[in-house]
Image (cartoon, rainbow, N blue to C red; front, side):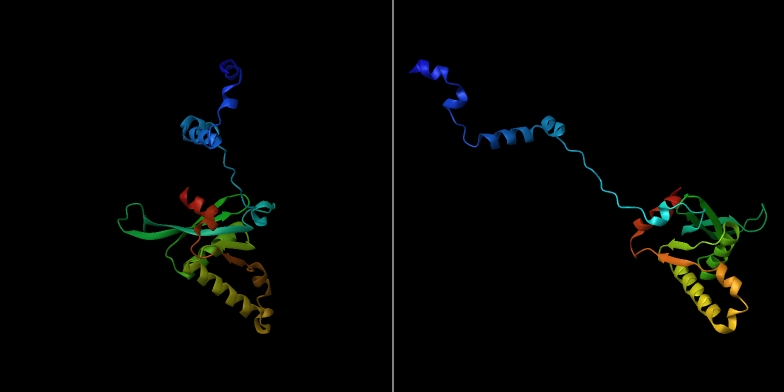
Length: 190
């Protein structure tokens, strides 16, 4: 009988209860084995907006944000008085080119002046993207009021050319989501 048992392999003579689960437990508790079997994570990226992918002239579609405050000297080189100012950063969504305008304060009027200087230098933008800052909301409201006033019959004849050059569509990112404006936020950091 002993000769017969010696011919039969060990795995056929004895059955280890829950042997597969025991082997898994040993392999998964081994740090080296666990690291060797690690699966690499694949990140799914969302599609870029069509405005970022289609070729267009620089600053036809742009994003805007404020940086600052900065202290600058008012007057000449030897002036001791310092004034707080901000930088309005306009970034092209296609080429990622950056245009910086100096702004004296955070009011809507000063931003509109910076927007006029930007458009005089870089050309009219069809789409402007920004966060929900109050100066940007105020600028959008003033431009909409100007558009409504200019579209009325009394002003239509006089200022028709001006209206065609100032037709800007403003897009705001959702509230409390700064990751939507990552392109111009990266420009602020740099």
